[in-house]
Amino acid sequence: MKGRIGLGKKSLSKAFIRIYTDSSVTPIQKFESDIDGWIAFQIPLQKFYTIRISKQGYVTKIITVDAHMPKSQETGDFYFEFSVELFENIERLDVSMLKDPVAKIFFNTFTKKFDYDYNYTAKINNDLKKMYHDYDLLKKQGAATLVASDLKEKQKTENAFTETEKKSILTPPATVIKSNPILSQQKVVFSIQIFSSSQQEPSNSIKFQRITDVKEMHENGKYHYHTGEFSDHSAAEKMLESIKKDFPNAFIIAFVEGIKISDKEARDLMSK
Image (cartoon, rainbow, N blue to C red; front, side):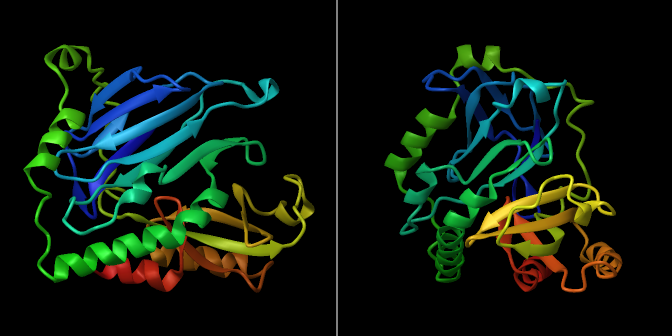
C-alpha cells in the first residue's frame, strides 16, 4: 500500500502512521511520512488492520483495511493507493466523529481489487461535509488557534515516538516512495458514472463488455456503476464523450478521500 498525507495541496512530512492488526493495542508497524508526505508499506492478507494517522497540532484520522478475501482469489500481491487529508486542530471544532474511520478499504470480489467501501463513506458523507464546513467557518472567523497546552501535551504523548520506537521505525525504500506530481497537487478524483440499477449486475455482464475497470457502489437502495480515475476534469470529459455512445445518461462524479461529491463541488474545491 502507498499513501499520501497532506493538507490540501500541501504535503505533510513527519506525520505519524501506526498500524494495528485485529484487536491488538500495540502497533505492528510504525512510519513517518517522507518530505513529500508519502508512506509505503506491506501488510499480510487475511487480517483486519486499523491505521492511525496523526501529526502534532493536527487532527488524528483513522482508516481500516479488511484484507480478508476468498482463498481462490489470493493469487499474489495487490496494490492500493490512498490519500488522507489532515487539518489543524482548532478550538470549538467538533471532531468527535473522527473517533470512527474516515474510510474503510476492503477486497472487492466484484472487481478482484482492493477498494473503498462506498456504502460506509456514503453514511458519513454528510457528517464530514458539516465538519469541513465548520472548519472553514471557524478559520474565517479567526478562530484558527491551536487547542490549549493540555491538548498539546496530550498530542505529544500520542504522536511523539519514544526513542525506542524511533529506532524501530521501518523506513520504506526511497525508490518506492516517489512523489506523484499529479496526486501531490490534487485531492479530487473524477470518475464516470455509467448507470444505476435497483438490481446488481454480475461482473461479466454484457453491459460491461466494452468497458474495463468497472466499480460498483451501493447507495440509497441502488447499485451505481462507474469507471475511470482522473485528476484532471478535461480528461474525464473526454472519457465521458466516449462512454455516452453506449450510455447516453452517463455523467461525471467525483470523490475526495473516497467520499462521493458532486462534479460542481469538486471543481469548486480545485479552483480554490
